[in-house]
Length: 278
Image 1 (cartoon, helix red, strand yellow):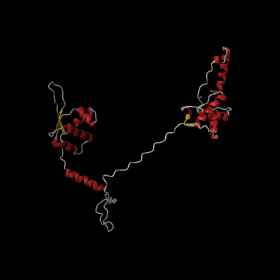
Image 2: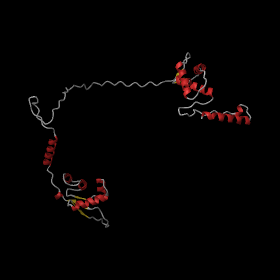
Image 3: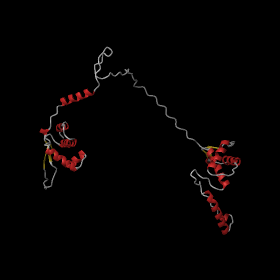
Image 4: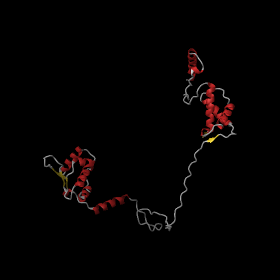
C-alpha cells in the first residue's frame, strides 16, 4: 500500500463519492508507482457493491483519465486480473498548511461573537466564555491505608415452615375468609366451621414429622374448609373461570353390593344431577 497515493486520492475534491471510494480502494493495493491488480470481486467486497457496479465505475474512471487497465493472461492462456495503474500526474497535490488554515477559518466563523473587554472583564481576551472550575487541593494519600470493607448486604431470611401450637385457636378472620372463599368457589351449603376448626386443630397438632409443618396456616385452614364444603354440597369447587378443581369421584358398585341394574340406574341419576354443575 502506498500511503502517498492513498493520501493524495483522499484529498481529491469534486469526485462522486462512489467513484472516489473505488479509487481509494485501488490505491490501498497500489505500490508507489500506482500499479495494482486487485480482482473485481475483491473491490466489490471492499466497496460493498455488486460486481456489475465495479465494472461500470472502472470504465468511468478509465474514461475520465484517472486509471489505465492492461489485460493479463496466465501461462495457460486463461484470463487473470487486470493491471490497474493510477495516473499519479492527475492527482492534485495536497497543501496541508492551506487545508488546515481553511478548516480553522471555517471553525472561527462558527464560533461565538467576541466579547468586549471592559473593566468588569479585564482578562477576557478569547472568543469563548471563561470556565470557572473549583480548585481542588491535592490530598496526600496514605499508601499503606487499607480501605474499609463495605458492609455486605444481609441476605433475606427465608420463611420457614412451622407447626401449629397445641393451644392454638382459629381466629374469626380465618373463618370469614374460608366462608368467603367457599362462596366464591360456588359451594353454597351448610358447613359447621366450629366443628371443622376443632378437627383442623386436632389433626395438625397430632401430625408427626415434617408433614405437620406448613408455611401458611391460614391458607391451609381455608383449603380445609373448602374440602368440607365440597363434601357438604356433594360437588367439587369451581375456579374463577368456572372450571372444576377435580372430577367427580368414581364409585365402585361392588363396594355397595348393587346389582348391575341398580348400578346403571344410580349412574344415570348421577349423570342427570351433574348436568346442573357443568
